[in-house]
Image (cartoon, rainbow, N blue to C red; front, side):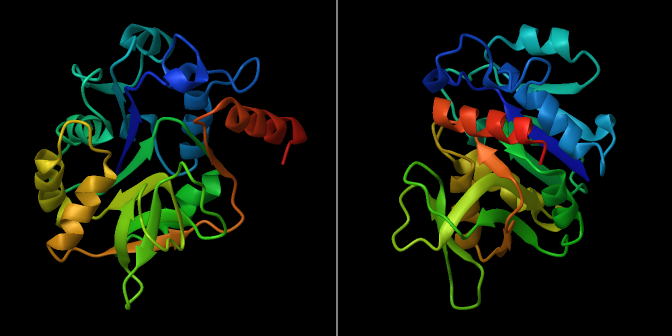
Length: 229
C-alpha cells in the first residue's frame, strides 16, 4: 500500500506565501510534519509520495528524502489532477491512501483504514456537516451515493482521507483522467460510482481530524496540540 499526500496547492485563504503543507502548527511542527508522524506507525517513509506544485523547492529542501510527483499546472488545476500525477508514479497492483495536504489527523484513523481494506473507503465524520466541506449521502445499501460540496440532504462530511483497493485502481485512474482541470478528486469518485464501483463510508467517530482552510481551523489545531490530547 502507498500513501499520496496532495500538497501542490497555494492555500491562499490562510494568507501565507508558502505551500500550505509548510504552515506551522507550533514552533517545530508543520502540517506535513504532523501528517508524516501520523503515518509512521503503519508505513515506511518510502511508501509516501508527496505531490507538489506551488513553491515546490521549499518542500524539497525541508523533506529531501521523499519521493515526489510534480503538478506543473497547479495554478490551473485542482486535486483531481494532483492525485493523477501521484498515482502515475505507482504500479497498478498497489492499494493507495490519498490525503489532502491540509488535513491534520489522528494516527488511529490510518490504523482504522488498514483494518478495513476489503472495500474502497471514504473517511467521513457523520457528527457534523460544515458549509464549506465536502459532503456525502448514502444509497439504500449504505454505500456512498453522492459526494461533493453541493450534496442535498447530506448525512456527514468527507474528511479528505480516502482509500482505493488496487482492483479498482485502473478504473479510478480513468475517472481522474476524465475530470475537468478544476475538479476536486471527489469528482472521480462520483464518476466511478456511476460505473458501479462501490465506496464505503468509514466513520472516524471521535478521532481527531481537522482540515485547515481558515485561520479558525489553524487555531483549533494549535489548541489541540497544546492540550496534549
